[in-house]
Length: 79
Image (cartoon, rainbow, N blue to C red; front, side):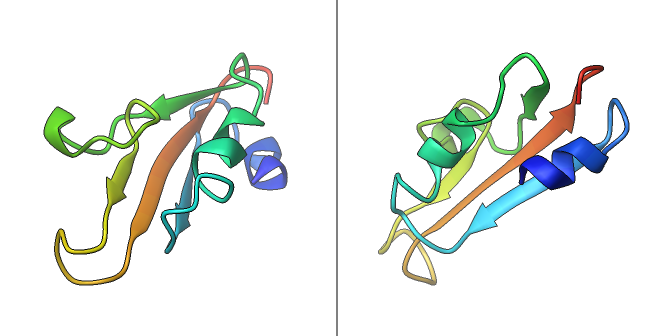
């Protein structure tokens, strides 16, 4: 994820998506990214937001699948 963001031009986007509800593989990965270098681009209506503002997390039983997390990141000038 860091390499992808590092390759993105300022304003470029990377999508981080995992088919899990594990916080270690979802929210904590995003927490390890330098917030001064990227912005999370809102993907979902507030009712469907995940723990990370702007992200989307689908839980088992809320539709097809066993859980899913996605966030779009926009590279800032320092990326």
